[in-house]
Length: 59
Image 1 (cartoon, rainbow, N blue to C red):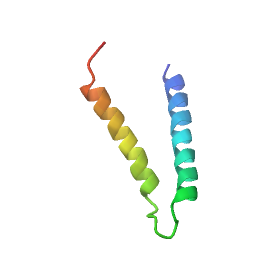
Image 2: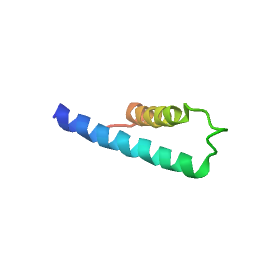
Image 3: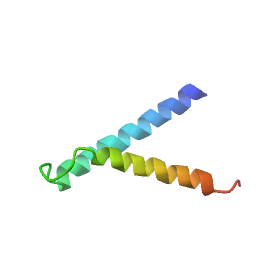
Image 4: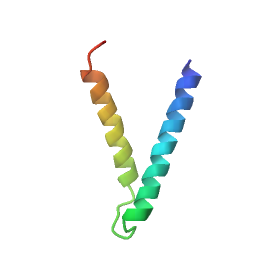
C-alpha cells in the first residue's frame, strides 16, 4: 500500500514540476525570476492540501 501511495505521489509531483517549468518558460522572463519559485509553488500546494486535510471533516 505504501508503494502505491509513493508512486502516486511521484507521478503527481512530477506533473506539477513539469507543468510549472513549462509555464515558467512560457510566461516568465528567467532573468527576472528567482530560482526558488517552483519550490514556493510546490510548498503552497502542500500547505493547501495540509489545511484541507486538517480542517476538513470526516464524511
